[in-house]
Length: 223
Image (cartoon, rainbow, N blue to C red; front, side, top):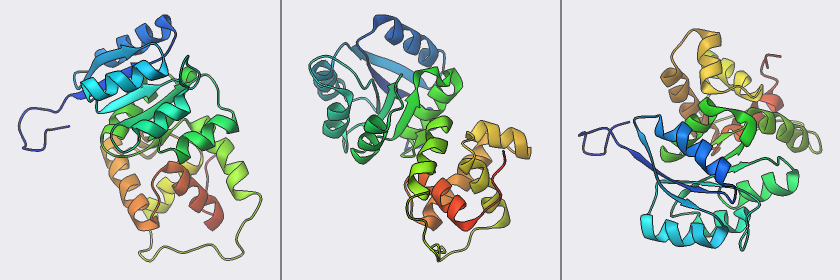
């Protein structure tokens, strides 16, 4: 990732908000091992997260759902529009997932997702994209598509290419860009470009939107 003026590589400034010191320490260790990510601050509760965000102006905030004084959902709502928020939590309950996405979260990750997905989510958020834990994506689809499946799904004005249809199916299976790249023998950067093109053609803002479309259109979804 390069800076807007084409100079030195851009460094993504990250704020971590979690009331558990061990979690903050572990996340910091993972992120700071990356040359393009810098942790600029840590907050132990929701109000501290808002104060530090205003002071430090990070690019991305990693926010836990359950925190003292102010929960992660309210923090996400208040930061939306000024800071890209990735919700990082142990809990994937519907009562957390849907409000987080409605409040403008750029990602929703379970703490058990692993280092590579955490790093990918931070980079995606910094690029204005969204990443949701694969297990959460698949479970969301069961709720989103089952109750009212349209008889005639909306077809994008600009049709997807064969490769984009293939990648949309993999997204619907809950796979990450790295997973898809390995499966299709292409680079993760190429997958990212295809995903961005799919989102643009479908008029959706995240991978859940792609997945819903893939299921509704009957695209092949790998098991």
